[in-house]
Length: 87
Image 1 (cartoon, rainbow, N blue to C red):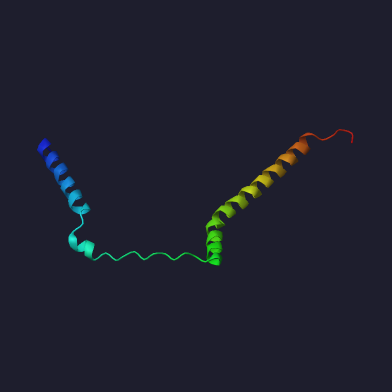
Image 2 (image 1 turned 180 degrees about the vertical axis):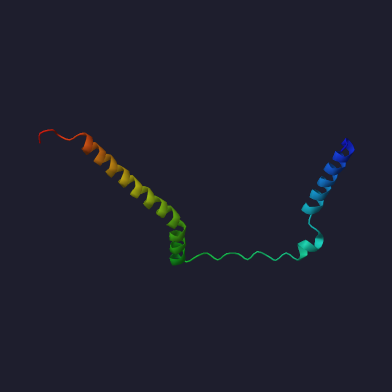
């Protein structure tokens, strides 16, 4: 493969990029207009907010349960290693 072959391949790759990124006139005329989204009423907004927060709440719940398990295990280790002798 020579330098000329590399140059020709590089040139045609850029030509392909330029052709694919330019829109033709009929593509503009066939685009459908974007419909505006109506604002949510307060009840719908509250439900949507709860749905968005579900994943965050699940992660927080799992993190708290794990924190409590670790704290319990640490307390058991402390109690096992610091028993009072003669009590």
